[in-house]
Image (cartoon, rainbow, N blue to C red; front, side, top):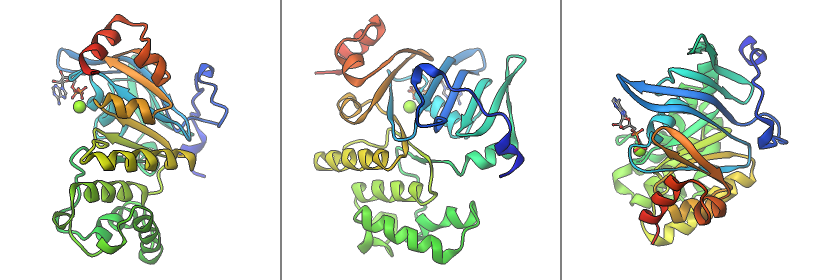
Length: 272
Ligand SMILES: Nc1ncnc2c1ncn2[C@@H]1O[C@H](COP(=O)(O)OP(=O)(O)O)[C@@H](O)[C@H]1O
Ligand SMILES: [Mg+2]
């Protein structure tokens, strides 16, 4: 264990009853501005192992910014962020202070599936899966390829190992993107609007896959505007509005009897 893993273990909020140990991701008091515009204002959340959490909210609420900062593509201005026992950012004098070594470690703990999948167009499916584990994680080709084949089998991609992305359907590309994220053996996987029903039959597959990942102990964070999907697949739903989480609870509670007027207003305009 490295020094970074030993120091700065965050204390999760006990109200979430984190009986499964430290949450996969823990965020407290996060703020983010672009110039004068405050995009995230005091956002706190955690996702436990084995839990599926969806973040919903209107366009411009800050969902993508939140996810970009959670996945270290950008930085929060203030707040505390930890992945398991790795404390990535601490709050110091109203600013988030990031630890470079911890960021490196944390990058091994999450995977992300982007809306447009961001596959490498000139790589085969196999190369898309094995590149990051070998380059970023320094793992041996043989071992990574064994795991890649297992994932392709599980996701029904075995016959496509040697194809490049443009030879695949949208649904197949979506599964390659998921397999690529899983090949890093993350503890948490994020989806940014990437669970969309490319074809209605695939929604059921995606639902089953996400529940299967959670049953295996993975934490799943989903950003989506698809209320029906969020409601069906999630253990918990967070409603983000104007940079703040204004409501949080079970999908039934948030979507059927929202307490906050802003949630009610949003749902009345998005649900049939
Ligand atoms: N790089 C950026 N520079 C300036 N403003 C940004 C940037 N990224 C996002 N924003 C602004 O932040 C707000 C939230 O955007 P975003 O996180 O994309 O929301 P959502 O994903 O919920 O639609 C929007 O007003 C957007 O214009
Ligand atoms: Mg967005």
